[in-house]
Length: 248
Image (tube, rainbow, N blue to C red):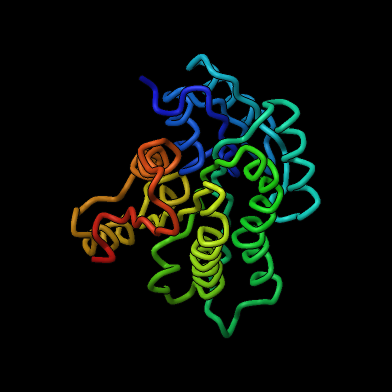
């Protein structure tokens, strides 16, 4: 039996990396998938086709989750197309790394808008749907640097730490309505972004991971699958680290 059969999942930022990995995993488990992208309609169309091959309904929406009104417009359109939302994955995120003394206000604001404000925007926009059906699973993508920090990433770390606080508060507010909210904190995950890194940098990261390997989008997707499915109906307000033991 497929764990997400007939559920509708909304995933922000799903044309590559972790987001695409989650979308593929969910589609393979029977979920209908609505996903967002910022640019490249052609790439989004390809993802639609990959997901639809599993025999489910899939549709990509060009939208900026960091914009409050755009998030509401997006959710309204998804509800019109899919009729309901069972799972929300707040995955959209960017990095604009740099030392604090050289960081511009623009780089700080951009990271906060896309990484943190988008979580508020999308959660707020889907809330009426969840409250009406008295169920829902919200999964927010944080990071291990949101737990332990990282030099040169004060903006990114702050945004991911903020997601953890938001997650715990939301879980407490909505638990009585059978709406769950959890966060996932990935460690070093091999994606298109990390493929551009120097091999020496990658080797140094891997050396500090107890499991001695980088994670994959599938590793993160499996944790999302657990939190989205009925296997986790008594799990809320938690932060699950998918990091190969980096935080141990």
